[in-house]
Image (tube, rainbow, N blue to C red; front, side, top):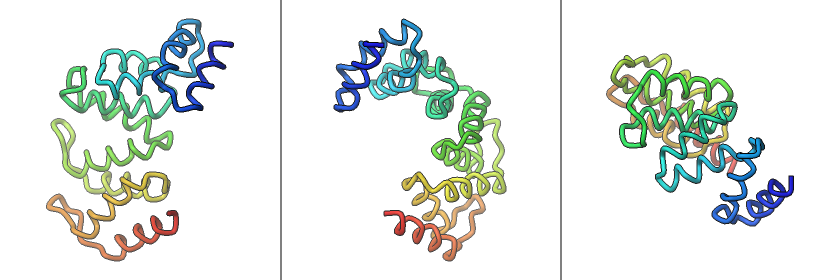
Length: 173
């Protein structure tokens, strides 16, 4: 408990680097509160195999699932390309409310990738979920731009939808 307390104290001061060894010690003692944080630290350090290990041990955290989806989707993040695994991780995270995963699924279905066929209905479903959730400004702005400009994969220009999203963002900020 003391190690966990000290780790949290360091994190509250913004000192993640100093907290990492203490969080890893806590994890080795069975305290699973820090799996995502440690995994995210290693992900940002581009130590993907370490990051993957911590994300896989925190599969109840939608942020870990989203990062695992990203790792399997990309071919340069330390794991073998596996679109089906990526989609599965994204879907589980999105179903639990993770708007980053929702946006990723929207883009995947909008563009189609490998074994995933383009599906405008699913793309718009996930984009609408991001808009309703209203917690991811960057994704909402990108979706608004899609509605403003349209795209060759079937998103029609819709200035009303664009304005609705921008209004929502401006009211929030």
